[in-house]
Structure formats: structure tokens, C-alpha cells
Length: 397
Image 1 (cartoon, helix red, strand yellow):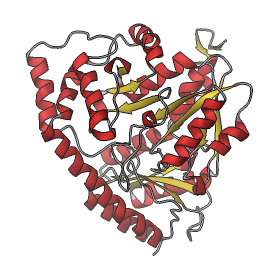
Image 2 (image 1 turned 120 degrees about the horizontal axis):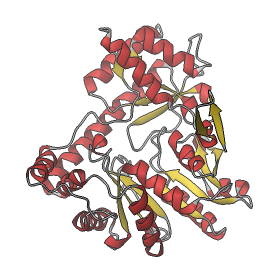
Image 3 (image 1 turned 120 degrees about the vertical axis):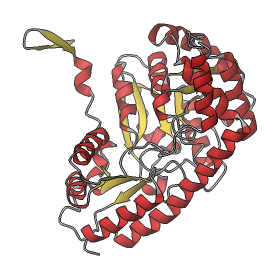
């Protein structure tokens, strides 16, 4: 079905199920203010302030100089898939056959491929509320129906086996979850993840697990869903831990029986992921690059350990300590501020008056979004300290 626009062009009905990405609206407004000469501190967008290490950038330049820029196999460079498999062996002790790895044009392309492969018209997919907003739009784009299940702080804002049992219907096909999560920065415990996967498996459903922030885990060794269930589909990325956001490179690990399906879809929808980015990513797994990434992970942890207590001191509530990614999901409802019951109005006031960009909860679902805001600490420590000083003044503390 389509909708007529001025009797000239028609837009498909599915477009109207996709809401604006409010994070990016905040980013645009902050950019306009900067161009007007205002110093705005960004704690909104989920993008590391670090960029690719020199060894990775050098590998990209060498690929360009050498003319290594033609299409690759639709599943990705064999060498890169082998390097990713080796990374799973080293970090998680898992033996992943490289033929199960699909290199994609970012994690978003991986999620689109997974939805294209698994979701039919009217199929329901469970996901926690709050969650990354694009996830529900990926599902809608292929005719599915995202079902957001309110997840409380005591559940670490994650989907549980009890949620699956209570919400599963005859139209439900599977679940889509992220661990660690955007916007909360919280991971599922291994026990919680295992129980949730068992509940899905008992109902014959699929599980898509977004693990793009797993490299940025702080309080424990992360457990990949691949260690618990060989039939899950995991999504990962070179954007966050590997600091390559604009390079648009990610990967999937899929069950062996589905590899031909994903190859066929990748051939038709994307041809292949960017070749230069793939060549550069080979250098991500060198000892030099991995040492850099680990130091950056420790720096993110230091920022978290500074930011969370400082926010609590200002009156924000953080009921669950984020253990990964670079986000804090904070409750503003007890702040002594006239807009503390409306996170959207609160965030716009913070931007206009304190010149700090943070994100309202209404981007991430429907479970009490007016009470919540998301802070990103993917910015330099001194800027975080200055942002907190501005918030203190803004709140009259």
C-alpha cells in the first residue's frame, strides 16, 4: 500500500511506521548552535571520541595505494572472517567456523539482513523497552510487528524468560535484544541470557542478539550468546570497541544452515561491505591495535566511574550501574526542576541554557520515557567535567 503525495509521488505505507531518530535531531540542533559560535558539549550521540589507530588507518591507505578496492565476496574477505573467528577463540574460547561469519556494511546492515531472512508479514518480534529505536524500525521495514515489553531496573532493563512466557503469542516469531544495551549500558547476566534463550527455543523461535558493545564491558568477562546456543544469530560491529564508526563495517555469526540464505540476501541487497574498510579491519586484530583498544576500554570505564556518582550527587537516579557500552540511563523525576516530569522539555532546556546535549527517553520506547534521559560518556574526560559543572549551575545545586 502507498500514500499519494500531491498527486505526484507515492511513499510506501511502511515509511509512516518509522519515527524520526530524535538523537539525530538533538545532534543537528547542537550543530546549529556550534555554527552560531556556542560551545556545546555533546553527551548525546553514541560515537567514540577515539578514531581508528594509526595501524588501521595505515592499512586502509595501503589498500587504496595498492588498488585493492574491488568487490569482495558477499560474505566478506576470507582473511577477515578468519581473523574474526580467531578473535572469538581468543576472547571467548569459541570455535566458530569462518563460513558462519557474514561481514556487513555496519551492524545496521547486519540487522537488516537478519530481519529480511527471518521476518514475514505480521510476524511479532519481542524486544525490551527501553531499547535502541532503530531495532523496531528494522522489524517494521520487513512487515513485522515489534512488541516492546516493559523491562524494569530489577531486570537490568533486559528481556527475561518470564517476559517471553507472558508475551509470546501465536504470531510471535522471535526476539531481538542487545547486551550490553543502548540506552542503558546494562548487560544480561549469563543466567538471565541462558534462561531467556531457553524460553525462546522451547517455543521454536529465533533469537537475534546484538553484541556490538560487548568489547566495552567493565565489571566482568562478557559471555557471548554463541556460547549458550549455537542457533542464535549474533550481531557485532567495528564501530564501537574498534572505533571505526564511519567506516561502516560489522559482522554477523549465523547458524551454519542459514549461511547460504544470508549470502543470497547479501549478494542482492549490498553486494559486499566496503572493501577498503575490510582491508583496514584486518589490522584491528594486531597486537598493537588490540593494546590500544584495551587502553581505550579502561578509559571509558574511568569515565563511567566518574560520571555515575557525579550524576547521583546532582539528584539523578541511576538504579542500575551500567556495566558496558558508554551510556547512563538516568531517572530525572526527583530533580527539583520544573521540567523534571518531561524529559523532552528537560533535554531541550539543558541544551539551550546549559549548552549540554543529552537525549530524552522517548527515543527508546514507551515505558516511562518522560522520566528518563540518556547520557553518553563517549567524550573526553575534561568535557564531561565541564558538562557536569554546567548541569550543576543549571539545576541550582
